[in-house]
View 1 (cartoon, one colour):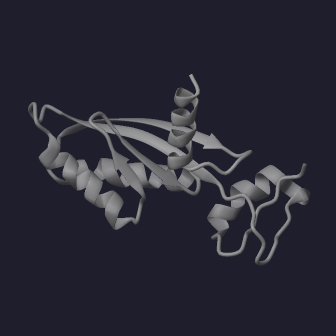
View 2: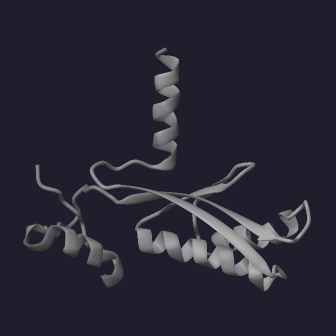
Length: 138
């Protein structure tokens, strides 16, 4: 089955990966339900040399995500969020990374994992529910 994407409302930057991937097969639809790209990102920022408690510095990274309108979840070891593209994901991580420097860190280590699945529409919530369902079936 051919992939279908709606380009309405997407910027040229957001359209570029779709155009590159689909070429002439790209279909633009108006007011039709279509597959929406969702990239799930896990990242952690470690301000090196800032002591054993770094929440006062990391709070600025989280605030940067909020300012960008990023839907995120905090865990004890990392932050997970959704983006519409890998490019958007890296922009959010970069903003959070830079926020830590702006608030006093001299050295920062940032680790990033990206789940970029393009064959189905799947959010963070969907992934968790799928795993819970699998656990419940055992």
